[in-house]
Image (tube, rainbow, N blue to C red; front, side, top):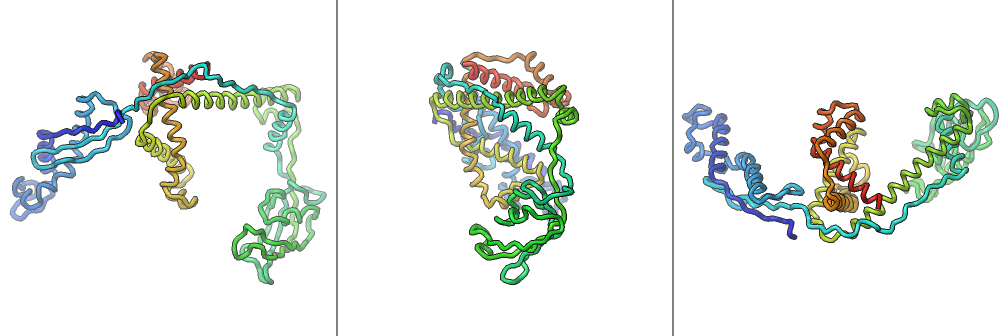
Length: 412
C-alpha cells in the first residue's frame, strides 16, 4: 500500500556518543580487578564485558533520535507507532529500518443527498402510562404485608430445606431468605408454589430439577419444606406533590405531570431517532469512500479500545485477566470481538476528517479557547487543568472540527 513507508537510517556520531554515555553509566558499577568503580578504562571494560554490553541501553537512547530524523527528512505524519528493526549494529554505527504507516489514501464519495429519511417520533397514551408506571415502581416502598397471602410480585421471607434421594440437598436450604415471587431465582415451580400461602404456613413442594441444570441434579426429583416467615409488598407512591418533587419535576398537578412525562419521553425518543439517523448517514457515506484501510491501523484501534476497557474494569475493581478468567475468554477472543467496531470507528474517523477537509472547516484559536473554557466549567475544572488532561488546544480544535463535519452530514 502507498501509505506504508520502509525507510533505513544510519547513525554514526549519535551512536558513538550514546555508547560513550552508556559506558560511563555502566562503568560506575563495574567490578574489574585492579580498578576502582568508575575508573575502569573503556578498552579494559570492553575487553571484559564486550562492546555488546553497551548496545541495549544505547539503542534505547538513539531510537527516538533516528525516528525524528526520518519524520523530519521525509515530511511524514505517522498514524500509528512504527515497526522498527535493527539492520546493522557495530561499535561505529547503527542502521535502523523503520516501517511507518501514514494516513491511508481514501477518496471521499457522495456524502450529501444520500436519500436517508429520519424517523418520526410519536408518543402514545399507553407509552405515557407505562412510563408513569415505571417511575412509580422505581420509587415504590417495600412494606410488610399485614394481611393476605403471597402474591406474584411480593417478597416472601422464608425458611426452606431441600432433599434429594432422601438426603439433605447441599446448598439447598436457608433461613429468613427474602425471595421475590416472579424473579425466577429458584427452579421452576418453587416460587409459583408459594402463591396463596399465609405467614406461618408450612408447605412441602415436590419438584424436579430442569434439563439444563448441573449434571448431578438435572431431571432429578427434589422436595422442599418451606415456611413463610413474613410477606412484603411494594406500595406504589401516589401521584402527588411529594412524588413530583422526588422526581425533580416542578409541576402543579397530574395533568402537568403527564405533560412532563410526555416531553421527557419525546426528548428521549427524538435522541434515539437522531442517533439512528446519524449512524445510517455515516454508514452510507463511509461505504461511498474509495480506498483501503491498513489492518495495522485497525489493530491499533483495537488495542486502544481494550486499554479503555481495562480502565473501566479497574473502576469496578477488576483486572483484564480476571475478566477473561470469568468469561472463559482469551485476549485474542476479545480482540476478535472488537474488530468490527474498531474498523467502523476508524472508517468513520477518516470520513469526518475528509468531510472537514472538503468543506474547508477551520477552527480558530479563539473559538477553541472559548470551547475549552465551557468544557472545563462543565467538568468543574480549571481551564489549564482541563487542557492538560484533554490533550491540549489542538485536540479541542480537532474535536470541534469533527463535530462540525458531523453536523454537515446530519443536515444533508
